[in-house]
Every structure is written in C-alpha cells, then in structure tokens.
Image (cartoon, rainbow, N blue to C red; front, side):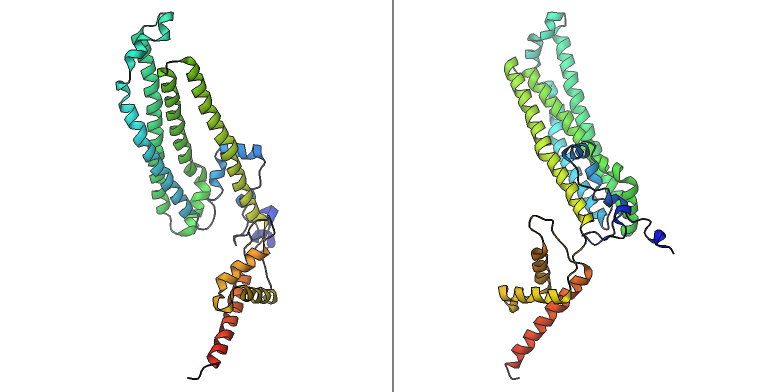
Length: 311
C-alpha cells in the first residue's frame, strides 16, 4: 500500500499529524481554522460552529447531550409561549378598539382588533410550532443515534447528517425570535405613549445587538481558535531524563509522599505551557514514561521506608 493511500483521509495541510487530543487531523478538523471577527460572525449566523465538535471519536455522546439540552429548553419555553397564546382573547381589546389609529383611515375598531389579534396569534403559533419541532427533532435525533452500533457508525452518521442534526438549534432560535417579535408587537400595541414605545423597542434592539456582537460572536471566534490550536499543536513529547527532572522538582515542592503519575503529568503540562499559549497535552509515550518514573520513585521510597523497620 502506498503512502498516498495511507494518508488519503488525513488532512492534506496536516498530513500525518496527530492533534493535541491524540487523533489524526481529518480534513474536517483542518477546516476548523482561526477566524477573523467577520468570519466568526458568518459562522454564528449560519450555525457552522455547531458542527465543529461532531466528527470525533465519542462525538455521539456530546451530540446526545446537546440534543437533550435543546429538547428541555424548547419544552421549558413552550410552557411560557402556549399560555400566552391561549390567553390572547383575554387581553384589553376594548382599549384597542376605542383607540385604534386605523379609525382615521376608515378602518373600524373591530377590524383593527381582528388584525392585531391575528398578528399576535400568528407569531405565537409560529413560535409554539418551532419549539415543538425543536423538541421532537431532539428526540428523533437521539433515537437515531441510539440505533448506531459503536463509535464508527455514530461518526459516519454525524459526518453525513451533521447539518440536519444541528438544525434543531435553528428551530429553537426561530421559536425564540417569533415569540420575541410577538412580545415587542404586544408592547407597541398596548403601550399608551409613542415616545416610550420607541424608547422601549430601541432598548431591546440595542441589548440584543450588543449581546450578539459583543458576547456571542467572540465566543464562536474563540471556539474556532481552540479547534485550530488542537490541529496545529502536536502532543508534547518529553524524554525520560527530563521527566525524571520534573519528578525531582515536584517532590521537592510537595514531597515524595504526595507523588502520583496523574500529579506528575499535570505538573509537566503546566510547566511546559508557554505563557499566554494554549494548553499542552503529553503524547501517549510520554504518559507511559510518566507512569514508570512516578512508580519507580514511589517504589524506591517504599523500599527505603521498609528498610527502616524490622519485621
């Protein structure tokens, strides 16, 4: 088998490389590059970031957790939307009928009430339907993933249907946006003064824009940066001699009685990390060497302690 055949499914830009997480850099992983703010804005708007973590070993567990959260949140918000829809008839429509601006244009108060009622009912119904679909979609997705046998089938399913699986988030956000529009329409309809209506709607728009542009988009940008670092940075390879030096330094700091392989690995990774740089992870060989070195030092200490007593 030729080298080209062996590396066919490994990212061309990272051919043969192992990611920081100990997996081969697949083409999809290689596309998880650091983005500018505009690129992150596009990723957030088109929901591309939701598929970054799907294609990996064990990714089905993360997707199931994600779908569970979407289903629960959709059902929770639905308990707010549906009561509003069912109580629309009880709103103060007499005020709208007697103060309708449409009277000036020959539209009767009753007709204005019917129009406003239909708009609110349509927006709320749209929100309810979207949230119900989001809940059902999460259940169907989990059932489908549950039918896969092992990580290999789950990974193939996530590769082939990642965008469809993530579409539940789009339904969820559609429900949120439709209900938000209904609330804004309700506020504008029943508010008594045009000045406070303009101020209130403007404040909502500013708050929503600030959240999306200042908080949501930078978070998506940070996620792309993290995924890019996982592909670019190889696992850390540390020779046995250097691991031994780290072990001696650690025992001086905390004492041989507290030494363990896990503590030594954490100590090495923390000290090897460059200031301001991404976290590092040891290679599998280095982890094995850490286990051996830590165990050897502990065994030596045990023998010395046992030599001090007579049995």
